[in-house]
Image 1 (cartoon, rainbow, N blue to C red):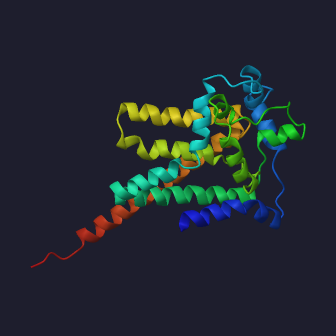
Image 2 (image 1 turned 60 degrees about the horizontal axis):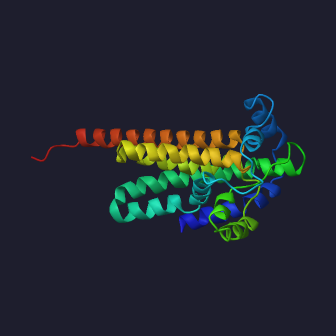
Image 3 (image 1 turned 180 degrees about the vertical axis):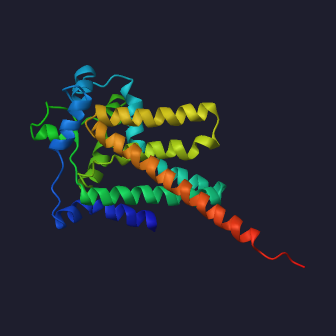
Length: 245
């Protein structure tokens, strides 16, 4: 139920932003990414290097899988924890919902446009919105229309922070101590691959990705502080209890 409520809030965050009279942030994000790219946005640089208009090379197939994994990855992880480790599930869901809620509030207060929208308005060079090229490469182009239908009811100006990037890093941070070296390499690779995919395909600015990661760091630090405080309070209460005679 809580996850559903969060999804509804995300869906209507654009309308809520209109309701409070918030302008869409765009020029500032273009300027930030141009500064990071030394005069040219990283998305423009990447698309100039890795052509997104022709048939996708084989290496782009896993990137399309990475992009789509955002829509089910955190939910699958939650389901696994529910059945295997209930205490960990509670910690996971509280942190995930805190992260998602913080993002939705930001979408309402600071609606922000992605690179593909900036290209449509002529603020940057023309780019392709291309997260599904990999699916076409392996003959599964039908996946793209399905996701596009979901986009039709999504918030197109919920770019800052990027929760594609945020959720990927959240999974890496939460499970980091629960897996071995190979697992850690896979988690780190997943977070980096998601960031690369988002910028390459015109879905998010580097600034969006960086802020998404910053939100994860802030949420995890806040919950770690709360857990330490709660543990200290329990310890104090136990130390002041009168021993049983």
